[in-house]
Length: 387
Image (cartoon, rainbow, N blue to C red; front, side, top):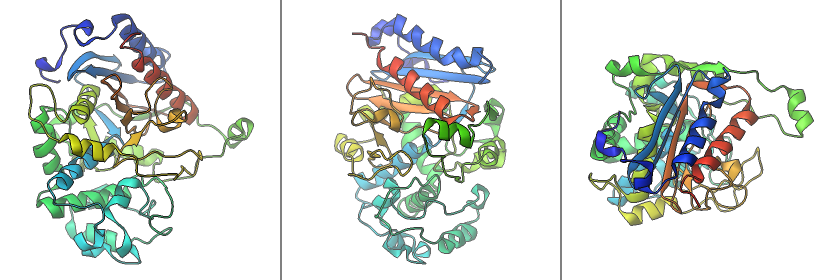
């Protein structure tokens, strides 16, 4: 649980509408009450304080959740610190930092391309439990081959790019990447329940993952005029592997963060403000501005055809297509964040100062229903500042 001073005295104390917050809670608990999701947790923060933190279903506010790709923003924010300190450059070749990586044409991959999912090896295989074995991890990196020329296109690297960025963090900092995150981000911010690499003693608090609902069929996609999503490494088996203690302990840099929704919302308050109220400042304003600048240009998602609007490891809401990027229509164009598999939500909107964390251990097999849930919850959260 966050420390008591992270909680606002009341929603009004941080300028939020209590009725609007109740509307958010009602929307979050809907699928839990209907029996689709086993549990869900929601947190909303502003001015560095939590105005809402609730859990529904078979869980409590002390329950921890795997937030999957929401973790990418945390890993990338650690790398921002190395850039800020002059220890890392975006134009550096990864192979100049990790020589073992520079095989099979990968010697041209830049650090920036790891952040932007333009590095060219989106499907490179890596078992999480191989990470602690340094020789095996480097052998894996050396074995990877390119699927396309780095920088030529965008294709989401579900885990591969973040494994390499974690290695870059280790080489540049001289510390294990999970230790670096803990010492440079979570401890200074006072976010004790934000874990990238879960301590064994905390396993009993984690919500067990399960799959929910029926998957869409080929006929369903055809009827809606939508392409079927490609098969990726994010399989049902891969998702359920995060129920294993050895996988949780690794702290998969692209998808293994474990925390409460409150820690997630407060982390984004820190990304907006440089640090949390009453605690150490972590990032400089110019660093945050650098990270939030859209660098992906006209690059589009191959599935939706929409511009991806990527900063350094985060997604920026942007134009009217922001709902395809995990935001609500009522978010401003400046909102930024990164969602996670199964419908985890994490963003902050500089226009209102509001941040949100939403977690569930129920992975909906219907991606359209899951997407509508994300947009619906995000729209309601965007309204909590009132009119």
